[in-house]
Image 1: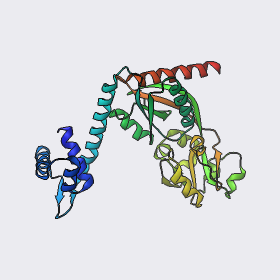
Image 2: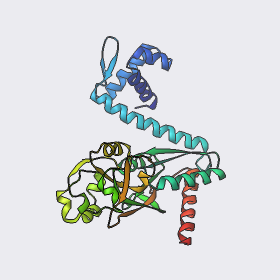
Image 3: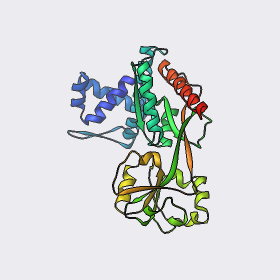
Image 4: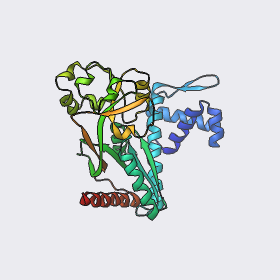
Length: 300
């Protein structure tokens, strides 16, 4: 498959009309149709359902659209890096992360780094840990920020001087707001929103103790992207187990955060894929973060 043909395919999939796509691509409609038919023959799959006016994607076409976009993104990213030169201190550093205390720490690092290297730009991709790791593994991200514990077998890492404390967000009228902290016993009759990672994490199994197997885990959500869970809590549907670093990003008068007791804390780590050649600006930023982290830890 040629990248050029994949780009043609993506334009047709977007426009759902070969004539419009041909106009955008500045090629003739017969030539574009021929390229698409050759692509279908090459893959041995029907990609389009052709109607009188519009075309729609088959299941195979939907799958190819997803994969083609990733291929094009990775190709363009690689071309840009070579165009700038791998050792150039300019370009884009892509970082994937959830919402945590590391967000504020990262913002300070980026601001200071760009004062020294103003030609470097940053792209922040929000997502959960699994999504960040997947994009790192495919080369679509340069760096990820994750919460420990995590599997480092495929990654180099720097432990950041940032910790998040787990707790629950509850409606402001909830009796738990009167407590300084929340215990497992306090939650035994509550509907709980938790992330899949937390549900399956040994830390929480240990924290809930004998109550864990009987917990009413009402639903699972991505609690490192908190907004949707916060809306459910504000409607009085239950309480959400999350980290204080995510809650700090929302100022909602109808919600309150209370830490868990005994305390559960997790440290953030900056990771990048092992044995992967990175651009000069990515390498310089990694060195910068490592130096800053060492300096802060030495002061403690």
